Image 1: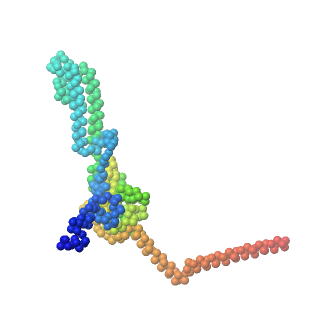
Image 2: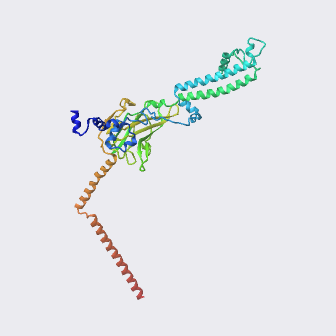
Image 3: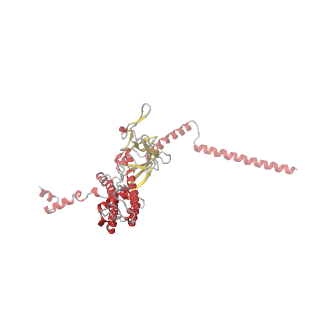
Length: 436
């Protein structure tokens, strides 16, 4: 039956496998691996399939870490020019390793210097000789020189090994080790202190809602998300910002990946400056200046965008600046929902229920864009004015054109009367002058 089927199509049996390979484009075309720029030139159905299969790639993760890696950095020497920041930014295991390594190396170097002085002066050859005055008393080898180096740099001073006044080179080395030891202590202890006091962990208690919602507030579509602080110590001078991360193509054809657009969350009215004592709902009004002005519910599901929210402020306990970040991708923006209330009034205080912090409930929200909603509201107002005009015309009020005609007629009549009066006055004056 395979032979007959092939012959019915006018093909030879040897060409049948080739024809089957040609008719199976799914084997040769790998749609999910197409780049984003190439998707713009593909048919719409193919673009939808590629977007559906493509994994969502965040610019900023939910925990606030930026999902960006720096590669092919040629000028690595720039990291060494700011060695303090480089050490602070290292992970804890590397930081502790460098901390121990720096102290150990300095102790060993100065211990070797003390042993070398004792070896050159011949102190090691006169151990136990009471008639010999060594550079350092009771220094009989490299181990004792290493211990004396630790005592000198850390200013422990057990009193067993003591430098004598008959060794000027030892006095000079003591001064050098004291100064360099203080510099090493200041540098390494400063790095550890800054590393410990970094306010990154303070951001762990600043929480953002899992989802952002879009619903109607005061008659206008708004995009909203919730922020809260789990600690009793507050964030001073807290402020909130939001940015839309979306690739765009200019009119000239230039492709801008991950273009950043500011979203107004109350900068004009001062609502972006927060008194974050209890959870607050941050609102972005979708107006003509909003990037969501022409985006409807159906259009939002097809968009590939991300909203990055940034909360900044000073830690009340330390006075250091803290920044907490989070993001919302398209699947985390819920259209037609609102947040559940979390604040209740108890006996003498307000209580926040963080179990409902992320909860949302559905509400009646138009699925059209904010622009279409504004146009619909304008159309609703127009029939009202037309009905008022029709009622006025039914009550005997003249039409606009007839009123204008009548007004022009009255104006021309009044102007004619004024001209006639002026002429009559001129004639009367001439007659009076002739009589005189």
